[in-house]
Amino acid sequence: MPTETVRADWIHGQAFLLSDHHGFPIVMAQPNGVSGADLLPLSLIGCAAWSILAIVQKQRQRVTSFRVTADSERDPAPPWRFRRIHVRYQFTGHDLDCERIRRAIELTEGKYCGVYATLRGVVEIVSTFEVANE
Image (cartoon, rainbow, N blue to C red; front, top):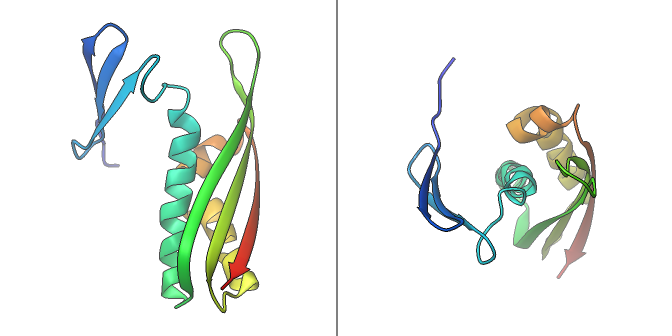
């Protein structure tokens, strides 16, 4: 099983420079920057978006715009555990097939996205999608 190492280097105050296993940087800081807690839903939608778009492109669907958002519900007291994440996929394009898009989402959430697979049994994840044909 391969090991991937990520890194956090303290810059100053409450600012950290995070690096993924390829060395790509992300600034995590308070109050101006990504918060550590925001990285969880961002990881979820980033992983899903990557996979879904790859599948939809293999389907030769003509997507012109694709947006993924997530609304998170967390406990009001420490440790502020995530309870529910609602993921919304928004597609715009030409002659998009809703059933094929639904299948791409199902494959991603059920098989290809490691973040979904990890969180699925711990956090309630709900997803919806919208398709707008131009």
